[in-house]
Image (cartoon, rainbow, N blue to C red; front, top):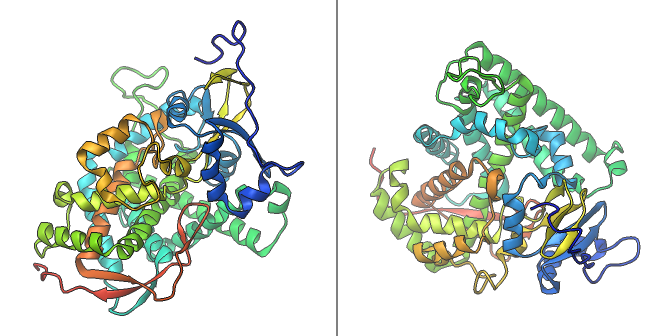
Length: 468
């Protein structure tokens, strides 16, 4: 409990992580190889202070302590450097809003992700995948991060807006969202003064951000003309009321709705964050499959058996066991946006025996936790079989799997994302083999945990013929 026992039983002072330098702290090591830096921290303890450029935080490297943080979102509120930057894009959307706003927003957004709506979303996912991959040709070389992000953005826009957006606006929204995504992580760790300099990169970011906000505001305004529920995400947001709103009658007839600003924030959140998560998972999954021919052969066998020559659908999901395990393992190795997350301490508290004053930035790294041998034997290896039913329960007990966060702030669209990733992966491998380019090195990793500079060559599969 926040503050409990801090007077009678003072805790220890949080130690500083070794390797820091005067003035710059750990910036040199962290910027040279941020993933290696994060992986090195657990060997020095469970809780320590780090300083990287403008980020000064208490780093937590133990899954149980991270679970305590995620389960107490009142004491450990959304905040810190990462969320300050994210609010430029999303405002106080569901992912970025403080605790004081979260419960109401969650209640208003939850109906859009009710399981009864998933079949409609799944149809959009599979139809969108067929449309995008229908342009592929045997022997074609794909820029995988761009291709997968374009595919998932197309699917998200269709699921969110129900195909009501003109094609030109759709393309512009995708282009602006991709630009915003690429620049947000870079700007987070750049001093604010440098972000204000009108460099070409900063100007592109600001133009894209302004354009994306304008497009989304226009989309919301057009949707409000016909506020009926058409089965898409935006319709659900427009028609949902909050029966828990202060002063609302028990029957919910005068319940509070999302404001125009809140609608804009939620649409932006789902479009940008939702698309990127699935795109990163799919890109890495297809690459890792190509690096492991035995797993690839097993996936083909499962796909051909389950689909039996027909198109994939939501009904197939329970039988796509290996595809689900591949996506789950991919999210362990490369949790999207999971390099580092921050929280802001709102009241003096105790964590791991250490005193943590109010105003402290707390940080944790899903990426680093996912690669600790104490939680995952042979943690650097790609082993989908570690996610069979029995082993999956053991991982759940140790709280060491965090691609979607945890506690009350766990991603509301986690099942949407997993469903899309499994269905799209299955659809692609049912018809295509993606080969690595000879001589291409293992791809680098972006701050968002996506692969950098990854190209793959398409080869048509001789799979069972699809039913018409």
